[in-house]
Length: 127
Length: 196
Image (cartoon, rainbow over all chains, first blue to last red):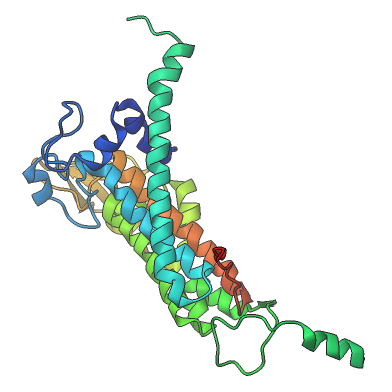
């Protein structure tokens, strides 16, 4: 709760295939650990019981996809203040959204490599 | 004096990007506009609408309110909670009165006390029903099969929902300052020219 960004990155770091873990679990996953077959809901019943704005969204394992609307909202508000003309606004929003998403994916990959290779070299873990 | 006048007019005029119909080309200086700042605090984007930058105000409103209510959609109304997530709410409150209204609605309509305890209001658990006791205090009563009016937000949904509503507050602070210290023109850095 206190460190939501770190919490979001931890599953990426612990996954050997962070991008696939984030972006490809929709239909099926070739990786047995990656996700459930229904990533947007742990079960159909939980989706039926969901009350918008009252209950948390049953995102399941697809929660990293929420990064995209989050980045889009940030870009819309920030670029509205920043850009000089409305003509360059849509392009600036798209560019910033893409930059944020790619940067987060890159950070996930770096964190993954750090946890999988650098940390075991520093602190050997006995089986 | 005449020399100074000539020097001033020999300077290139600032780019008039936002309001090309303005009569005199004004220098690109900040203006302190308290009313615009106040309006931006009240409703996200309203300060820029007051400054006659409609598209900028709409962009701020869509972005800030979209993030705020998007955060509530993701994390549930529990993503805005001044009692249990106080530090997060400090920043969320920068969205304006709407954040206080949502929190007030959350505290008053969705939380209740445990039976026999008056220390802390909390969200209901599955199997609890929100009822008013004879003293007029809302309490949680055990009722198997009952659903509380909302669910406690946990895990990634809570984290991302709370984060989205908090970032909305941060972005609205930028918009408030931009409306308060307003620049009529904004210079865009042109892309580098390719050599012929």
